Length: 377
Image 1 (cartoon, rainbow, N blue to C red):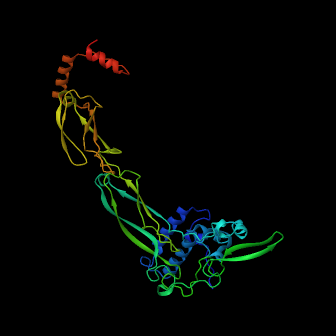
Image 2 (image 1 turned 135 degrees about the vertical axis):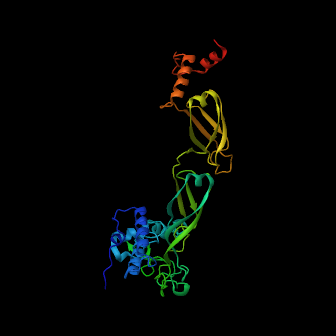
Image 3 (image 1 turned 180 degrees about the vertical axis):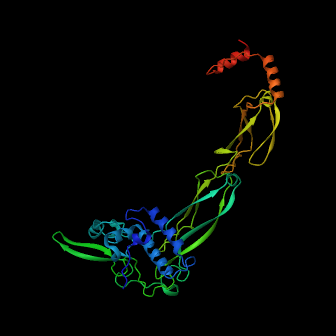
């Protein structure tokens, strides 16, 4: 009989790997060895080995048991602490129950089955797609409920029989005699490993696991106005639970590519435009770029370099349905570096008319300074 490989070695991760590291390693190897993609001999067995390793290491309880007991602990995870005493996680829960009854212990009720794992992916979209919204496809590999047994883990979807050892409770209670008297303790059933049922005739499609690995392409709607780093949640699009719990969620993190003309701050779009000295001095009719296309703009005479103008309603939409943002256009006066003979003569004439006196500008002008200027005092 072939000895099982170490699960960490199968996924190519260290024993201190985080849950995210394990998930990423699984996805990478599952894609590489999926029988639909890899036609090499042994690819199917390798794929099953990868799935088996991930099922154990992705479950916190089963991983903890595996770290302590190796492959001997396989199959004991997912039902709370496989070596604890159920409910309260402490033998004192049974101690109180033996003294005061089940109502006082409280935690003796079996907890709800754990949900499937959540998944997270990152999608890349353009600046325009973030403003206008878009549809995109997300490719992923995930565990889904076995279509042959519908998650019962039994052949043909049969209902698994109740464990005859524990009567379906998932635990076995024992009475211990001590110097203080009799005490009742509970431990996971060694026959069903706490499940309460026995898989007497395993489903051949999922090998009695209740889940199978599948590659999926999911269509995602990106809403108009979404911002960089925003995360969308698709409930029920994560991984199926291995124990009959709710399916996990799929979290989609949005990454927006930069734009050559625009930047963005919340709902406000920023852009820049360069004008020459004559345009800034005399004013001009400009054609400005916006996310909706070019628009006409009348540049007022006497525009200063760095002055900003607001184009209302040309920003990003509001995700909550409010008014659309604005676009702020910063004007920069471009001084020519190379002049024709005619241009140089014109500038020289202008210099003679305007003179060469330098006007000193204060470093900081207060509101009262501006009032004095307006009043001429």
